[in-house]
Image 1: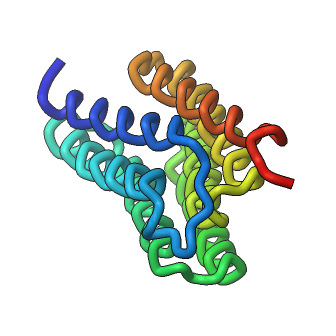
Image 2: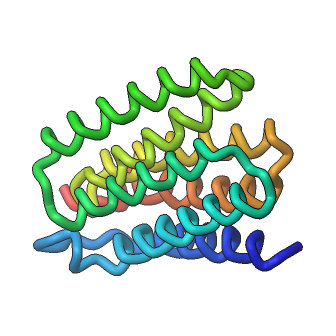
Length: 177
């Protein structure tokens, strides 16, 4: 295991810790420790994906997808209205799906893209809601499936834990009526 892999693991661990934190209602997304861990973890994974591309020959489009998630984080922290953010991310997501079809490697790439799109949409949804956590659960489950298919066991387990914590926080009992 090299330092680039450790960087990827660090980013993933920060995301899992963020997913495990209890729900909190905040006046602005920037006031949430959970959101900060999501943003920092995503930024580290963007750096990881670029270094993995540059030094290990990983596909470049993984870096593009991480940049997409960083942009979703920026939209979240800028508190851009959900409708506008969803529109922008959906258009970007459609573009990424079209691009991946042109680059077609295999069907698992589509699973990865859908997982990334789901994470991006989950990031911009209102903090502390069942809807947000359910979207994050589904997206991370797709990423766990992709990691399983790709035999990427570290990221498989990180996504499994992220998915489990997000599912836990989407339960009705975790939310006030």
